[in-house]
Amino acid sequence: VVQLFVFGAVPFTILMSLFALLNPRPLLREWLLALPGLVFASMLTWLFTHTGLDATELYVAGMMLLMLFSAVTIQIRFGVAAILIAAMVVLFAVGIQVTHNEIPHFRRHLVTIDVVCAAYMLIANWRMHAQQQRGWAMGLRERLRRQDLFNRNQELDELVRRDALTGLANRRAYDAWLQNSWRQARGARATLGMVLVGVHRSQADNDVYAHPAGAASL
Image (tube, rainbow, N blue to C red):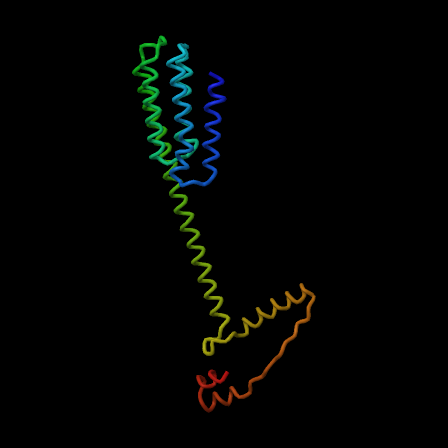
């Protein structure tokens, strides 16, 4: 029994986990994660029904733990979890009914308890999956809101750095450019040079041709 688990089920589980790490399609990845649980449940049922050992308590506990692991721990989608848990319930019912061991008279009660536990586990899986979807949607909405706020701030920053009449950079843009250039020059230990040009015709053009013509002459 130990060799069957160590050299059969465990390597299969490791192999499926490695395949899941290769980033396959989401549905395929979930089935790769779900199959080891089904394999363990099948092996546990086969051992319980063919070894002749009186291990009803261990079988019940083992199947419950496998269902809990498959429905909640590995966090697969509800559809995949429902199919997997249903298969485990069928395996459990078959194992309880066909075993040659001396099982107490409460066979049906064991199956009923198993079905009820499976239902609770699926409810937990559904709620967990729904909560994950809500969290993802809220996170996406928050990222979009931050991106929109960033874009609006960029637009406002561009507006306050441009003259509304000429569309040229204003004094605020000049101060920001000067500070950035000075910082870069100091960091690179380079020389910073500036050329100032005075446009004396702009006022005369404004007086003669009005402000739009004066702005166009710039």
